[in-house]
Length: 589
Image (cartoon, rainbow, N blue to C red; front, top):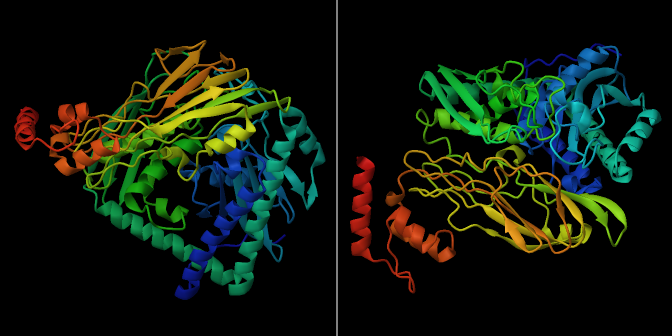
């Protein structure tokens, strides 16, 4: 094998650069499409809980498939760790590497990562990589784990394929350690298809335009992204900005808040995001690895500097310094449990936006519901007489309003970006449940000049004995408003057993809920925070909100100062003017 190819920006042709820019995006999107079409589990082919990417021989991100934002570091850091593990001479054409090491990927053991080194004429020119969520990896199936060993099979840095030959012993180990092996191995084959797609298409670019030319184009793209990110950073006033929030608890020390504190320093064209004061790692399974801590800082930075610059690559982050000390909830060390890794990072990113709100109020949003809002159920399907594990994927909820517009409703939380919830009808055909309600929640969005987005309720009745596990946070830390906007409602869980509803749980992390046929559970996602004083919202917008069922008559009057006729919804202008004047005066005081 020849030494790895060095990427140089010298002599980059501007036309080839634009072709390569769109080409690498097309490659990673085709990788996504092929994985989605060949996977066995709904969490991949419907929810799209995966991502794909192309990387340089050093593990630098060239392009990642638009998907889960906090995966932005997972694959790159995994490739770099694999390079350290195998060494430059330890990989060869035909290899496909595999791992799910939680402390490298930064996430949980369900995320299997496949890496294919791409060789052109015996020279390493890059990597094709895919990280996807398997529905099961063994381990305990319910409750809140307290160490990584109880969470399932751990796959170290291994070769699934060596010089084109499959490692059957590894496949057999996986088969024996998962509950539904046909689906797990089906998803494994789908991931192999994805990384081979990336290899084939990237080599086509290299063959068509030349290895040196493609490498120069990629280097130029990264430089361009760096330049744009620095320009946008310079537009932020220099200074140090801080904010804090919290998570409800870690599911074990119930009611003990988990503090989230962030510090952002802006100095000309560089930004430092410091997560030193984020909580220490916790006993419950809400930890994530340092890779995710880095991902938090990069997602926040990209959102405020270069949100529309594609492909997503490492050039955009050269002007960012991330401080993520070991042992925090987003930089946990072994053997901290990681199963619910994705929950806390979303609030950390939201809190970075909150810190920057005084400096760039036109570029940030108020708080959002910040949780997947999923409850997993398992049991024996009475019709198929088979064990099943099921769920709907992320429910979606309200996002915070901006300075210029309302927040969006019923939208998947920040961590899951491009993922989807599973269609109710499809879930009903696969597991024994019936969805009795799936609707927006009136009055859930934070009131403001620009209203926060609305949350969603999903009410599910079960048709067979099942066990339900909920891991929902942000019940008590409600999505905050900005510049006088009000907070939204928090996330909620309610369970109906033997005809009686119960919702007064101390949090929404409830494990081992035994449900019988006819029992039900309801999940309500929170809304998004409002932006600006509610009494400044245009009267006709409040009137339309009430007409659409987004805001109740009572809240229109109480929070927005708009008095409407209960029958015709015609505004009472005199009463509205008087009430809004009182609100404005109270707000000024």
